[in-house]
Image (cartoon, rainbow, N blue to C red; front, top):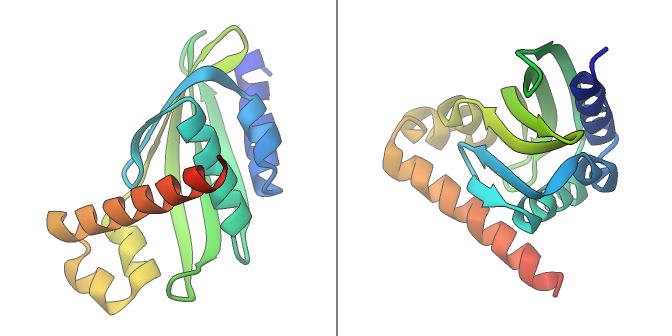
Amino acid sequence: MSSNAQVLEKFYTAFSKLDYVTMNSCYSDDIVFFDPVFGLLRGDEVKLMWEMLCKNAKDFSLTFSDITDLDEEYSTCRWVATYTFSATGKRVVNKIKANMRFADGKIVEHSDGFSIHQWSKQALGLSGVLFGWNSFFQNKIKNKAKRNLLTFMQSKT
């Protein structure tokens, strides 16, 4: 197993245990992260996002697979998070493709790809089914996530 694959194994095993401290130890200090909901985050924003998500997780489970080294610098994998969305009490199974870039044994770039529409259909029910494809509705989801992260970050200071 490559060193990058070992880091991914460590990251997602920790995530499956909601161990954000170990997850964050896999990142460089200047980590750059992107996903469809939180958008672009950097450094401590990324680490605090994982802390917030892990602390707020309900009925959470995670599986990961298909760790693939694309070259010495880039790796990818698939992961599935299953949880109860706290705002609605609805069960979500979110299927995600992760792409990561490594340097000096740490993750320096991490992007997660998934469908906000598919997520919103599960998490929000009928409103997600009807409007989850709409960019205005998706922006509301993104803005709410960013506000939640900002509030969490402010509570840490």
